[in-house]
Image 1 (tube, rainbow, N blue to C red):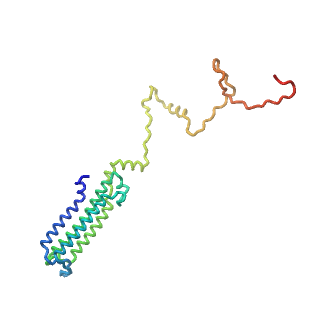
Image 2 (cartoon, rainbow, N blue to C red):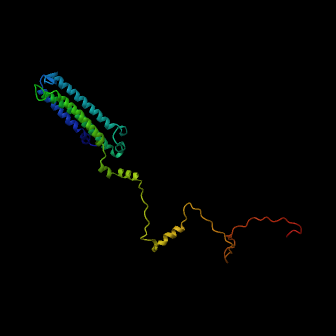
Image 3 (spheres, one colour):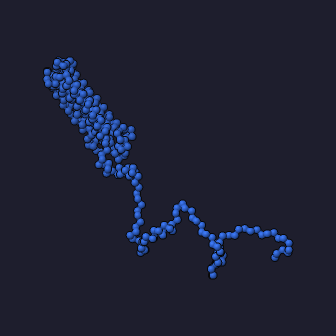
Length: 267
């Protein structure tokens, strides 16, 4: 990935840092020496701070947020994907989608962290316009800004978990991984090609009886083959043929010769 590709997800952080730096610069010029931070219901000041303390605390908080962002971004970039928690892990942790997964994680991290920097800038602006009885000198304005930030972050986090990592339907339908998964899910198997009956070999003409003849000539798998019935009489040898050819009649059973009883022995 090019340098521009690495920096593009961090664009929200860059914008937030520039905005906060501008607000702090304006606060250093326009804020009074004694700044009212919290107002009561009647508009009087309740909590005060010096201008330098306010700007220093805001700058330190901003630096802590930026350092936390850099550490988190480095961890997301270098941690193996198998150790990352992400919605729909079976979809996003495939090798073909890991690059897009890291890009989305970096983008959402930058947006969430930038929102914290913008909250600091908004509070400084509220303090700036609330001095000397200005339009921001109402007790509920800082509270409303803080509660609005919390509610907005909760809604945004819910969107990230649900829709932020939703698969792109158009890309998923066109990817070969999705096609292979759909084929395995439906149990589809490639069909056997049908025999080509339009162009018989050797000039033979195919007829409907050919298949029946082939089926009759082909023995069924697993079926026992019946032996041929024995012939009633032995087959005579053909003239000019071999006289040693075995007869096709079944062999005679063994008959022992009866013992000799009296008389002269035979031959």
